[in-house]
Image 1 (cartoon, helix red, strand yellow):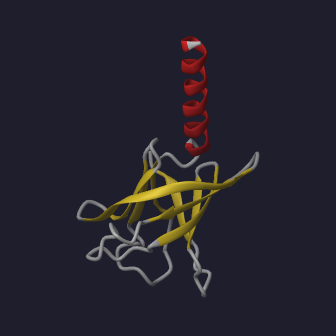
Image 2 (image 1 turned 30 degrees about the horizontal axis):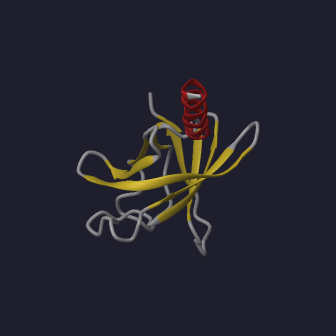
Length: 128
């Protein structure tokens, strides 16, 4: 009984991390970015850890952490996510979107501020 509980927990944890695998890592801005957020522009970065937490902004001084990454939809060639800051921990001194809808396709990441009336797309590439 204990062995099956450990096995089930291991599968559950492995399943959760595999859903995030395409976005885990560091991403850097790829070319000129749309205007609108001073710390989420041409030199911006996104860093996502295996626990589903994200840091956004311009490294090294203008970063905002504690955003949560959730999976929206996964297909064979791309996965969509939402990166969102809880309003209680959003960084007021760092100008980044409160929430992003993100699509990863290989080593390319495209992010759009959730509900953006302009549909501005921020493009990133996997660092390193």
